[in-house]
Image 1 (spheres, rainbow, N blue to C red):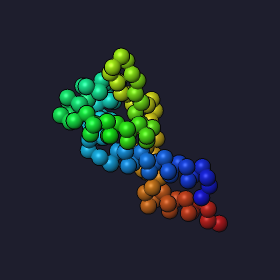
Image 2 (spheres, rainbow, N blue to C red; image 1 turned 120 degrees about the horizontal axis):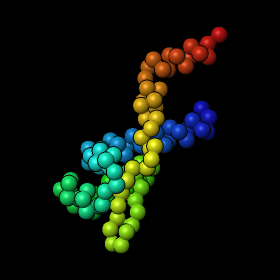
Image 3 (tube, one colour; image 1 turned 120 degrees about the vertical axis):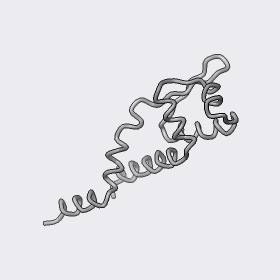
Image 4 (cartoon, rainbow, N blue to C red; image 1 turned 60 degrees about the vertical axis):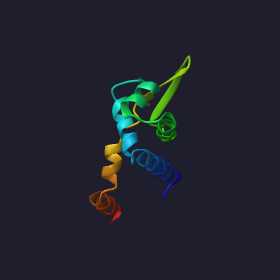
Length: 107
């Protein structure tokens, strides 16, 4: 395994971990519609601010979400292109993809 492949797998694991929670999936779905104020997210999810902050931090650490401050409010949005390539990444993990890789190396 090359260093590049290991780095890609580490990033993919971080993204999958971030998406493995129902609250975080709801946040991503809401942010697909555009930038949202944290107060709107809190109200929509009927969640406490500290709990929501934790989930937003996980998404931000995974490179899926970005934030900006305006006065006393924080606004969150999806990182452009952050979700692109996930379908291909999942497909590459399938058993058939592994068989194709082995056959490609075989003589």
